[in-house]
Picture (tube, rainbow, N blue to C red):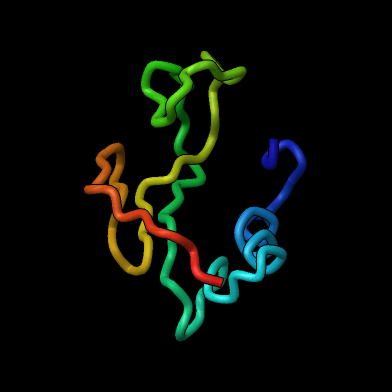
Length: 100
């Protein structure tokens, strides 16, 4: 949808990361700067994939996107500077409570 609307990646990052963190009062989230939490993703904006409900990494596999072609994919996710997702492989859970 973002591609069809000529939205830039920096706009999406603001709307989906920086702004929600600001609204929630999470000062060390959604930003890249010294002292922040180093929560980052490596995103491939040219990747194309077909949604397969059976391969989704969430509890309920029902999705309106089943069979749809999507453009863009997260390749890696880093939380607090620690790699937790790498192209389909998840590390051990590292979750915890967010501190305000």
